[in-house]
Length: 117
Length: 287
Image 1 (tube, each protein chain N blue to C red):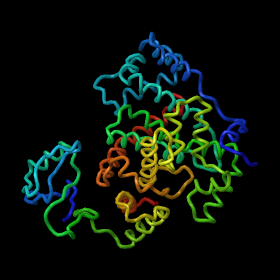
Image 2 (image 1 turned 180 degrees about the horizontal axis):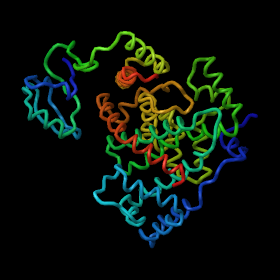
Image 3 (image 1 turned 120 degrees about the horizontal axis):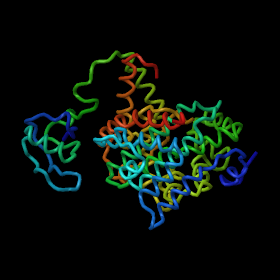
Image 4 (image 1 turned 90 degrees about the vertical axis):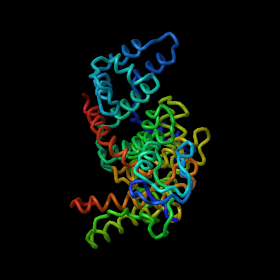
């Protein structure tokens, strides 16, 4: 059951579990087909990600619109990220994983703009 | 030279700047039930650089006030008394330390990291729905200030720590612990204590690498802890430690911040960081 970020949601997807806002109020139940209005409601109430029905491999890693990058640039960015996070050995901590993903994204955009890192 | 604790190290350093009197007078006035906004404004108005800086903050995009604020008393009203002290302390401390040349660390980089951490802490606190977020800016801004004391007054001990960190492949703060017996976060806290800043500022700063051990303000310590990692991950400056310090596995649960929240937090930090840096540079240039 993939968890999708709000920006990667598309209308017609179906929620797999109830959707709550930050204070725990239910916005809409499981098995709701998502419309543009639902997405607006989630934005309004600060919902960042929801579970939808589908295959787990749809899980967004770098997001669906990641531009294709030069493999050499990718390798350099990945190596630098590994280096930066060398003291964070708890890879299965989701917070560290997310921090790493965002750091890699940032390095990639800096590198592809020709900056040195 | 070896010291028993951070307090002794601070006492032996001969060139520790003291906090300007205006901060203490403002603090006294803020605690006086008879004082009003005009009294606060009058105290600030005595320091023209501080007044100019406060006006610039009030008119910056951080407050997004629709009109131009042109008097100190209006700026004080807008900023609010709770945040006023934090802003004045932050401005005074950065002014104290900014003009000093340093061969061990790039001061620009040092402040970039500190401001990045300050803004991150402020934004995280906002996402955690905590009030008076300016307080968190101060915590983030000051978390590494002990390193400046180390770099300025005891460069040979700082060098030794750098070397040890590299040789043993360990985070710099752990190398400092081996060299000194304590690390820069203890020095930061002691420096703040010597300036008579309250426990609510000292505790989160002292435990920003081990937020679990904070005695009274554990949640705030976790916020500075995460903000430090965030500022590192966003590649904002560098205060000596080139790598990202290990993150406490309980951070996410303790602050109730799910991983998906990090991205919007970073975007908000990106929006505020540029402004904060400009404001900071205007404060340190003395105008």
